[in-house]
Image 1 (tube, helix red, strand yellow):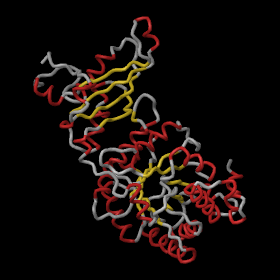
Image 2 (cartoon, helix red, strand yellow; image 1 turned 180 degrees about the vertical axis):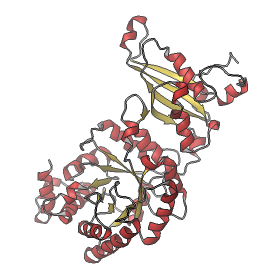
Image 3 (cartoon, rainbow, N blue to C red; image 1 turned 45 degrees about the vertical axis):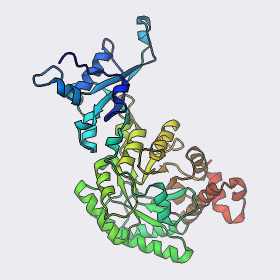
Length: 426
């Protein structure tokens, strides 16, 4: 057994049926990083902290983790420079055959066995094999499907509103708020992520009353706003909620995926009887992504993984909000949602947090037109009221879709609401 090393050159595993996990590791003085990485690779696959009987050469070859690379940061070569080290990038290959294609066992293998491996690492990326990815269907609708669902041939940024206040009102009161925003031609109106299936406002009551409000607004202005209902609940209730609200006439469904788990998203997406777009909200993901030294990177959790799970649209924050996310990180999240990933459809980035006409201009410049702008406060907090606030967001979305000059547009008498918003929120 001793002659079979838990170390391989990248060429031996990168094109095989291996998942390549990339970690950041900040070592402590006196720690041999090379030995630590090998211990981690073994501990997350075959073994434990010391050799045990029963591990065969065949098991090592077929099921053992392989350290494929260790990069020092910075890349030091001499003993004299070791005090310059700030950390290490470690890549480990895990054979596909070690686990079935599901998220619980993926997370358990790549992150979950902390005690026996004793390595505080942050998972910053995963390269999946074609074989492993083939088991994931990804988004049902994706970007193209959402535009088709809305009957929109011409592409522009879509606008999503979340009703404010977040909670504390019954469905009839919410329907009045919904109606006032729908008159401003908003594409989707969703529940706030804090509002679930409550005693004072059930999901069925909301679908019933909000659908009536959407119909009433449509009859007045000829623009149909879809209601996206938050079905987040315990696992057995999520699927039930999805079927109930679909039957009641919902226009889309939303789930707080970091809270309920990606497997629940996957189950929803793969349920063929559910024919509504599925929106994913990142609420509670901060606890998993914000530490520089442990957890998982935001572009991986909020981008690649939730897309694999099957969300059609995924919400995250921008650097123009009060949440201090790095600009390059939010761009990376959008890239992970939209760039080619085998046969998985691109998922639509949904940008929320302090979104108003001025920040919308920046966001579209950063990410392009095929996105969704999630605006709450700028609509309900508009000085002329929520209908005018919604109109301002609709106008900016149309203008950005047509590459119009915003300043010229804002001077038109019919666009006073947009002018006010641009001046109010610089």
